[in-house]
Image 1 (tube, helix red, strand yellow):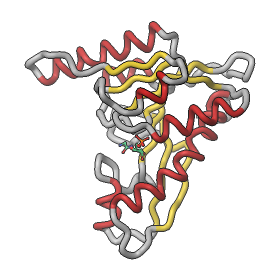
Image 2: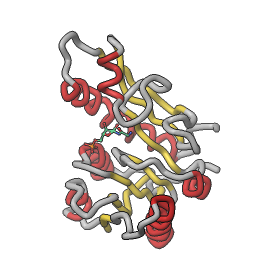
Image 3: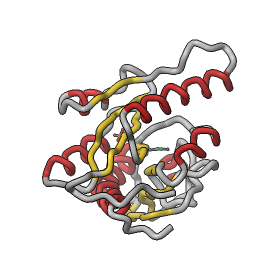
Length: 206
Ligand code: GAR
């Protein structure tokens, strides 16, 4: 189920989930500040309290919090309990669409089912190529001459959900992982806000 059709008068309520510096989050917040949009960020969540990106939300007065993994010995129980906390925070903030932006945790099918159709991710490769946590390393090791980013709905698999949009970038000879990462981030920062615009106004028929 996709989110309701929103407008700049009644923008879709987004939560952005991050794990690190949040350059994608900042790009989105700047985009939303620039003019009225059909989506607004009402919540920023990270999977640790020291994720640098939390400051980008806090300095704009957006509710922003790190939710670390709870202290539970069993791995499965710990993961499920963590997701319960995240789910509770999303409900409390009346979030309508969950935007993964550099969130480096794989969500369980339990969580994905609860947010299905209302859960989007950005991945730094042209999926289905190079899924997983090491997309840039894998692209370089494969001798790719083109890479890019993919925005997709999240399903129960890893980076396997329905693709909404992709942008290509050139892989240059002698690129390092960080060269490629930075070049891809530039196109991510343009593409994600545009896709969210389209999603928010019902522009995808899926
Ligand atoms: C982005 O390049 C995003 O595509 C990637 O993490 C980076 C986050 O950067 N996501 C993944 O690798 C998800 N598997 P940021 O924290 O600077 O926005």
